[in-house]
Image: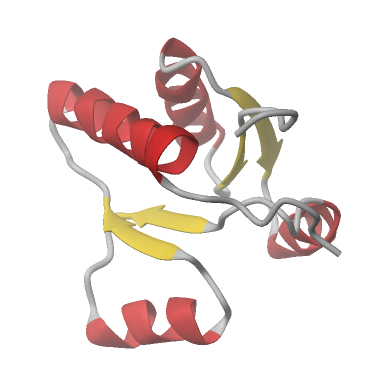
Length: 108
């Protein structure tokens, strides 16, 4: 992913959850941006639309998954509960998006 910042936008109403996610992603060498509300997230997503959108959530309901893909997310991942599995999953996501995935070279 040459020339792009390895950045993750964290959106959650809970400061504790945002802090835990921020720490996990930073261990995996990601810079993070954070939003607490949907309105903040919409503005951030508009600025970062060239980046992949991954829903990382504890919800596995079919309605939530379908809604996410309808909104245009690139991936929907069930968030593990155990801390070590959580860290491992964050690492796998990073390796996929940064080393295996091919990005559009000149996003509009």
